[in-house]
Amino acid sequence: MSARTVAAIASLALTLGASGCLKFYDVGIETPIQAKLDVSAFQRVLILGFLSGGSKDVDANSETVRLLRSQLRNRSDLRVVDSDVMNLVDEVDRRRKAAGQAPEAAPAAILTERDLQPYEEIFADVDYWKRLGEEYQAPLIITGSILFTDVERSGMVRRSQEVLDAYGRRSVQDVQRFEDRKGYALVPKFIFIDGRTGVQLYSESFREETLYSAMNNTPPLSSYFELMDRLLPGFLSTLSTQKIKGTRTLLK
Image 1 (cartoon, one colour):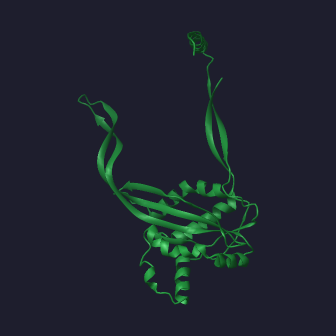
Image 2 (cartoon, one colour):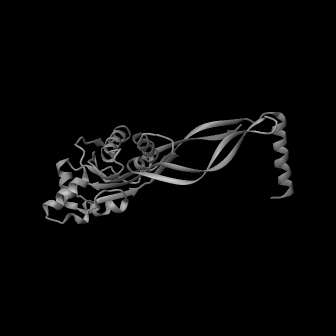
Image 3 (cartoon, helix red, strand yellow):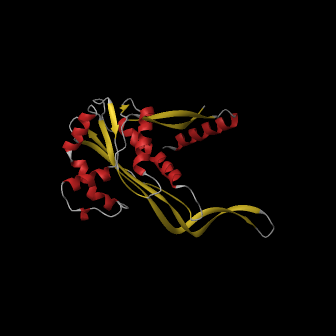
């Protein structure tokens, strides 16, 4: 940029500032996010149930099915199929028992993603999902796994604290201190299956975590909904175009 150009820009800025005609306006904007999956071939969506585990304080399977059904009724053109919530862990155990398989492959309790792995074989059973699709008139099937687990962390935490100086004047400063913290982690994996063929179309995993002071007694169910609120936009954007609202500052 030449010196002459710089001088011209500086002159214009001084003129606008001196005249007092420089004004700022915040304008609301919406940015569309295109759907990740083409669901135009489906009229119905079936959310039957999930593999679930973690905290016993929240039935992550039932709560997730109910929440996603409610969201899709309000945010999707697909007709949500009403059905009983299926516990896929129990379904896998039932199938193994019927086949005479030894139970030692399954963990005693599902607390981690590794514990879920022995059960994930059900998602590859094309014939099983095709039969379900035939029963419910060839919907898009949404299933997967979800873990809602307790977490604990210890470390330095930055907080704002009011302090008094030697003259009694108040001020706010950022201070660091070591704290024990506890909270919850939510780790869902959503799997989208074509109910006409039983074939898996798409899958996506998320992870959200929230931590509180060790003295905080936030109910587990409240934390579950807080974490689900964070990841719902990502889930919904798989099925339909979503709009992200924001603001843009204009000069006039």
